[in-house]
Image 1: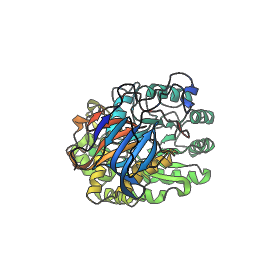
Image 2 (image 1 turned 45 degrees about the vertical axis):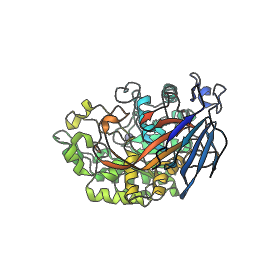
Image 3 (image 1 turned 90 degrees about the vertical axis):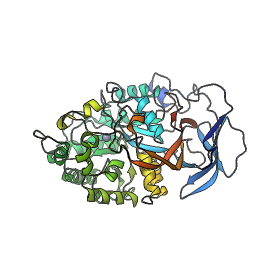
Image 4 (image 1 turned 180 degrees about the vertical axis):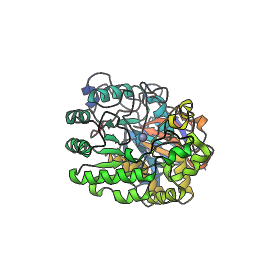
Length: 477
Ligand SMILES: [Zn+2]
């Protein structure tokens, strides 16, 4: 490895390299080029191995005004800032379509700054946040309030999913306010909704179709989840949510989707049989998501680690996990998302029935998956598809997910050789625990560039809160 790699030089002395979205009306969030936007400095990445669709080429990337201006073998144009990237691989910035950034009344678990710092450290230049916050994101007004708050605090680009609601007008308003999908949480609706009734679900699917929004589904059938009254251990708790809850929910939603024809994205699928039932995206408007934890861990971890390995849907038996991993590597699953779901350790340590499900995932996904690439179990091309190209395409982020001229300046530099160990104490997330604690990794995110500005480099957050952009569905800001 070249000793100089990753060195950053700067000829720019002062000035914020970030864009603030002014507080105020919806118009402030909608205008594609706000007059208050200062011109962004240029950045030249020199001598990287650049991932271009199917292979890497040696070359340089010039980013100007937040977009990729040129990709060429040699670029001699002067730039405000230069990165000598010898020995590093340049990939399109990762897109995590499923994160819980919390904030507001749940800021003690995570807030926009800590969550998006974790994203930047993990190589994610774009995240889509889930609506089960306090208050929940269940109206246009609440979405705008959340977006305004985020605009001052985020370090990476952030968009928002909204809760499924019964009112069609509200779905339309949320779409206008920039929602990326309607989240249908079948085990326990986020906003009041009788999810046991097929007619209610049909109404949600119809409203989504009318608003041209996908429905993101947490597919576990509440009727198939056993009561946890007598549960003493996390292993028993996992035993109360068996795979049949997923099978039942997936087949029900597929049956109803056939009638309506809206787009459905199935979140955190745990069973290979579900992936087969959903089929291969983009045909049929159906897509699937897998997580690093469901593809790398099994029930055995629950027995060993208890609360650290408690999430929903829960981890599955080893043989199921192995087959799910294959569904991911062969490209039958559409995307990888982390389902980053931070809690405090105090909450997690409560007795099993009271312990909130969820683990942080933004800072572990990439080192874990790069390790799989280094071991020859996953191709780099597939990884880029699963973590960047496909999620960008799926959620209409047409200027992201690929390294090419005119695309957004969202780029990560990866050191494929760097060895490390998962250490939750070092997380930028507020949630300092992980079922992957102590795992040895090879391959790490070295630098994260968002909209042409360096946000993370060599273990340090460089970006300022507010430097990320709030994304609105269907618009290139
Ligand atoms: Zn989730």
